[in-house]
Amino acid sequence: MSCEHRDHAYSQADIDTVYRVIAERRDMRHFCGGEVPYETLMKLLGAAHRAPSVGLMQPWRFIRIQDSALRKTIYDKVQEERIKTARALNEREDEFMRLKVEGVKDCAELIVVALMDQREKHIFGRRTLPQMDLASASCAIQNLWLAARAEGLGMGWVSLFDPEHLISILNMPSGSLPIAILCLGPVEDFYPRPMLETEHWAQRQDLEQLIMQDGWQD
Image (cartoon, rainbow, N blue to C red; front, side, top):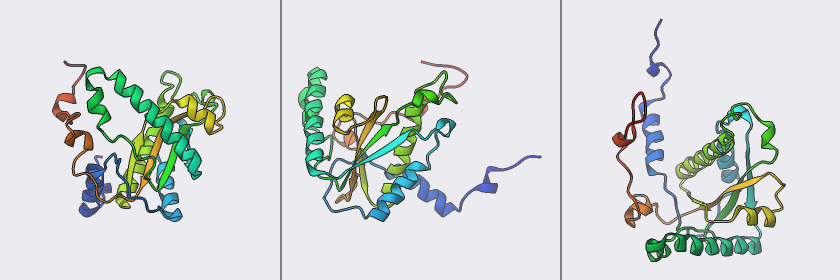
């Protein structure tokens, strides 16, 4: 007995919408203040929480930053790391410093995503690939990103920070690990293309060059 994938497919309009949201998702750095209604925020975090996770361990933790002084501290530390990153890029230092790489001060909501502590207890799916906790949390972030785009909200993933510093200022337990600072909120416009493409920092690679068959091919 054979089956067809179309037996379980959504309507063509729904399918088109899913692919459209994926194609139009952007890593946003420009925000226009405003707010995210609490009900919408919880819907977005609910979408994140429905992400797949190895062994159903659900390693993600979401820390909502509402204290203005704490947000400024995070912003200052991001700027410190931005300068260090620029210097590490050597000949591209000046080019990098001209890029807007975060929206920490301007976004409506600032959320730190972290991996929980005591993850070593979860070995289902992690005995040989312990980094699957990070992969699972990344799926949660992508869910949130796509849901935010569907709601008309921008989101940007900031990785320019020292994890140990965030662990300290957020009173996180030993063994936990912050992996993302998410800037979320209304935007005036979504970039027509990824910003790093329009700024000529990098270009999307040809998919055909990234697909291999039956083994690794150069």
